[in-house]
Length: 128
Image 1 (cartoon, rainbow, N blue to C red):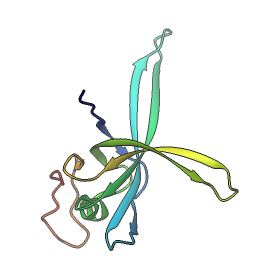
Image 2 (cartoon, helix red, strand yellow; image 1 turned 180 degrees about the horizontal axis):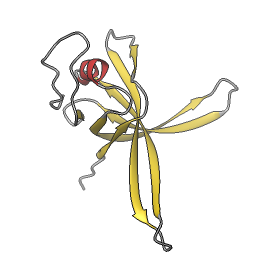
Image 3 (cartoon, rainbow, N blue to C red; image 1 turned 90 degrees about the vertical axis):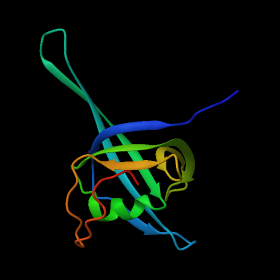
Image 4 (tube, helix red, strand yellow; image 1 turned 180 degrees about the vertical axis):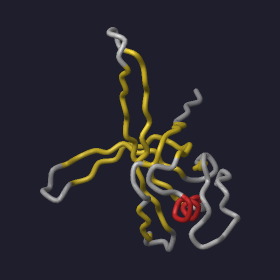
């Protein structure tokens, strides 16, 4: 039996990406992505519900995220859903669900590209 773990989200970046160095010499980018649903309630009033997603990017896409994405930018993210456990500072075990963008199955597509800060025109919002 074939199983698939793939998520596609279109939303807005909730905060500037955080970039960190990895022990293997690579980099990872982390940011939040907001997706919203709007509707009209029973009384005819507009209503909205926003979900926040934690996104972690590895590999070649980190460079695009680092130079091109900023808080508020619209983006499409494709990756796999992963849940991991960790202990917080007080020692309490917690779990977090993330969209992991890595390898050939992952991509970040900037829907309204901005000019890179370093002037490099090659990062134009194409899938990475």
